[in-house]
Amino acid sequence: MNYQYDISIIIPAFRTPYWPILYKSLENACKNYNWELVLISPFELPQELKDKDNILLIRDFGNVPRCVQIGVKESRSPLFFLTVDDCIFAKDSIDLAMEKYSKKCRKKDAMAMLYGEGGNKMAESYWTVAGPVGHPLRLPGVNMSWKIANQCLMSKEYFIELGGLDCENFIYLDKPIHDFMFRLQRAGGKIHFSPKHVCIAAHFPNESGDHKPIHNACLKDAPIFNRIYSTPDLYNNRIKLNFDNWKLSPALWGDRFRNGVPETYWDLCKVEGYDFEEISDMGKYLRELLACELK
Image 1 (cartoon, rainbow, N blue to C red):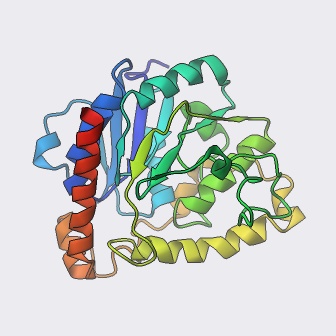
Image 2: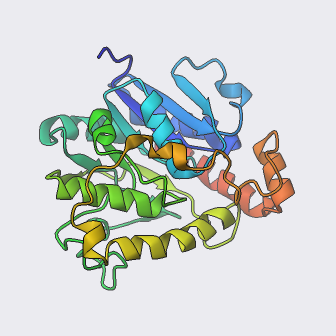
């Protein structure tokens, strides 16, 4: 297959005011490879990005796993980096990750793109099942030697071969990406760590900011995940899924769009009653991070 880019940065996204900040940081993080930004979103591009040839916007109103699946399918490179839209990327971080990936990773492997939330950089032990005491992933069907990769760099072809994310059972990204990485490791793949923290993300705890639907989705996903990885008949042979399972996921994420789909992100915040001050503070935080990384 002839690909147009070296890597696709795939983001299920809706915070349009911060996309220009994100894009600028990507230019600083990936200078040596030809990249595209794939945004799967209910909203249009902001004016500042409409002239960028390397942005693919896919309009969709579904939940996060569904959007990931669609974005990977439509991406135009052999590798993809799955990440989020409330972050900025560290200088040269994607270049360094790509270099290590080419030297260390096979088709079945993935790279955990290390990141931090709310200004904190998590230690490498955080990304291992055996690491933090009381880790919620320590279930009967989870191998203690396994690693996790919430944000990952990996082969598009192999992601599709394994069926991608379980969009039928899960609503948000946290549990289905753990499930995918456990399936990948059960199939013989390995997870490597990026050479440095790739991004710093903002963080809305619990129901603050625009986080309420995500918070609720995580609460709904956790019991399903725990049941799967506590039941031998469910986890023993759980490796490959049907990639088209995303079509079983509702086309509209009802918890995010309880009052219909507004025209813009700010309209969404207004109709859903999100806290404008907290959201504006996040934008200020991201701009300050970007200014530091561009120095």
